[in-house]
Length: 444
Image 1 (cartoon, rainbow, N blue to C red):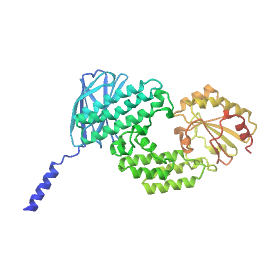
Image 2 (image 1 turned 90 degrees about the vertical axis):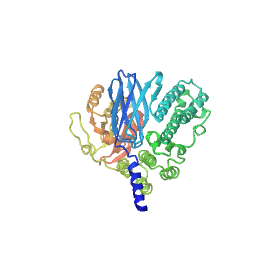
Image 3 (image 1 turned 180 degrees about the vertical axis):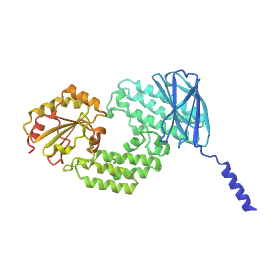
């Protein structure tokens, strides 16, 4: 009898447990609907925005249920855009709300208590941001109560609307990031150097791990940057990874932060020094800290930046007629490469100096090669014709050469030797004058 009763109770619990919805329908009505577009964006999903279908002030959309229960409602009218976070428990089937748009970013919403709270903080955020960005030069001290208001107003709204735990957590993270970013903009707003700001970010905000150790923190794009900035020894790969594992427990956030750390390691490493040791260090860290193996693959691709390495494989170079030109055709001479683009103003300043250098250089053992990384051929060809650019002019679709050479900015210059191997990564610019001429004349 007891077994039967237990089975009945267990069956009842299973049947009564709310099931996660596969899709979520959202309906928003508004009185200000003329020429207004709305889209619904699930947070935490890979799917993009879905345009909400309008019908006389009623907007509706059905999307895959957000993994977090959070969505963004994006509203655009003319040049004005509003983004309102929206929360629907994953077990709930539908949400209907009425959204009122006021002046200067004010919003009100007739819906669940959670969504009323999110709309209220959206308005508070807009007001505080305006107050911050209208400060006068030198008014750094006046910024402190504004930055503090992001936090205190979020707390007041949470209490007033008795928010559910997910919304409470989301809003605390949101307010923290607003205050953090606001402090980061303070130097520019008040025109003062960091050392003259009368209060520090640490005085204003607690350590990030006390607020951001949550899967909801990963919904904010700049969270990994905030976590990274607080790491004491961030330039040491192992120390940085160990620190975040000791201070953060959420697996979703940890993955994003560790990807950020490993990605910075790959892009900032000095590949001309101890390449093999750097790769070995990353491979060990990948195994120890569960990093994405692709980081080590990306590191290995930068082997081409090490002097003595051959010109990277798989690089497509085309002339203005679309013909593929193999880099091996330049074998037998040193090749001075200029990586540039038609939209790059500093690149264009180098063009006349480079063209003159090519005409006057006496060393016939050196040839010049300009390679464009423009997204398409047309602007490259147009700029070449405008500048009357002569000599070897090629185009690299997709900037694959720049990526292989870990180029962080253009114009970028490199020299390859007669055997097609890298001689110098980051060679002097033409505008640097006699030093480059002396270097090139000495290549035998």
